[in-house]
Image 1: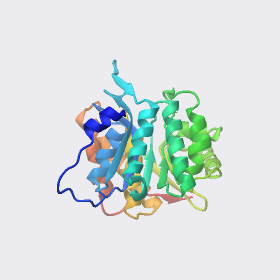
Image 2 (image 1 turned 45 degrees about the vertical axis):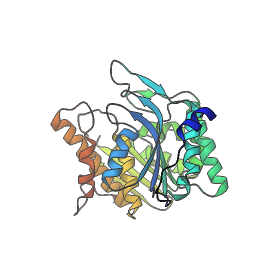
Image 3 (image 1 turned 135 degrees about the vertical axis):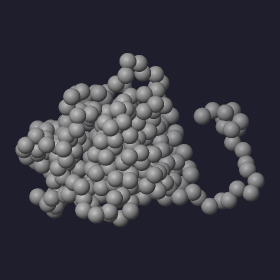
Amino acid sequence: MSDTLESHLVHERRNRPQGPSPVDLVSVQSQLAYGYAGNSAAVPVLRMLGVRVAEVPTTLLSNTPFYATLRGRVLPADWLAELLRGLDERGVSARASMLVSGYFGSLANGEAFADWIEGHGRAGSAPRYVLDPVIGDTHTGAYVEPGLEAVFANRLLPLAWMVTPNAFELERLAGQPALYEADALVAARVLLGRGPEWVLAHSVVGEAGELVTLLIGHKEAWRLQSPRLDVDVAGTGDVLVALLAAFLLRGESPQRAAERALSGVHAALESTLAQGWEELDVQAAPAAALADGPARFPAVAL
């Protein structure tokens, strides 16, 4: 920001309290004007669950790229770096308990984010970090710039407390097959050897063709099974991670948080189908995730 612009915008307010505003989580992802993906999917869910979010956009787009037209821009890397610096200047990074990153939009943005979090790592001030390594999917292939996968694997993975790839992304990061359950378990343990404490691998194919989510730690592992629904909309992974983060912040165990998150995503997909909407019904997710009683999709220890 130029000095002229700064002098024009910066001003004082009378009787403004000086206490810092609480922030539970920083979410660095894409932003849409229409539809639900990235922060535009995650932040509404987080706020409905009472999580105080600082949202940092990596893109400002009209919609997801699944439509005939796409408007807007990927943010320049220096813009992203300035937004992150601004959070530091407000003390947000020190107050937040958790950090989530998703779609970066460009290699340069991934590098800018990595520079920022590595700096916090050296200073011992990094929040607990959940890495959603958005690379692509089995039916689309990779849709990120070449080189970004290396940023995930070499710079961000070692700093993450949890990593949440789909089966395709798990294959790319581990460098070995991971589409099917047995392979995904092996690949997830490869990632655990590179730094994270937990891997949540979703969209994995089970033995009977069902949809499987795997939660793997260094000493424990769980399997969650859910039916495959005939619907393909953006934002399901973003909502999954948002729900997971919200319940971890509430003190839930990783396996219980995973159960709640999967239930919420499935309910959102069911509502989307019932409504006949082209975008995910994210507002259906929190209530289902909060439901008491036995888990709809229980985590079974492996």
